[in-house]
Length: 176
Image (cartoon, rainbow, N blue to C red; front, top):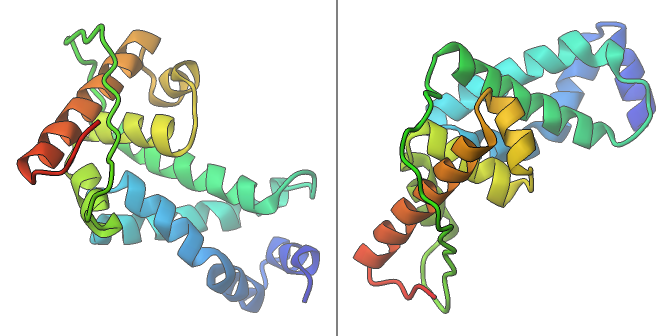
């Protein structure tokens, strides 16, 4: 079954098509959920909620542009909306004028270890870090997504980088 047929069958509410869509994209979307969640259980919940939203809104997809990009955006927005409702994104009053770049050079740190460090960040820092560094959003876009100011986005990113740098230094990992 082609992707277009799969999408059309999902629009008609066919369970088999929904199952196939889940099998086809769950690993990619779970990776996104892991980035934005504090742990695996929360990521699984976010994946479930994302697919529910995808199934609900699939009728709005008009076959223009990338379907995978469309469902990834829904996943990110679903997770962020959940955090906004939980009021985990309070405005930060700290002001970090200097942006700190963290570059890991010749290290033995595993991707899972780095992900664990990112997941340990406070929600506002983790979300901002992932949106900016991992997904390439601008501070203006992040401020709109999270309902904060551009300055808060920059401050949260700087603080996230500082925390990650401190964690890496504690493990004697070379930082540039």
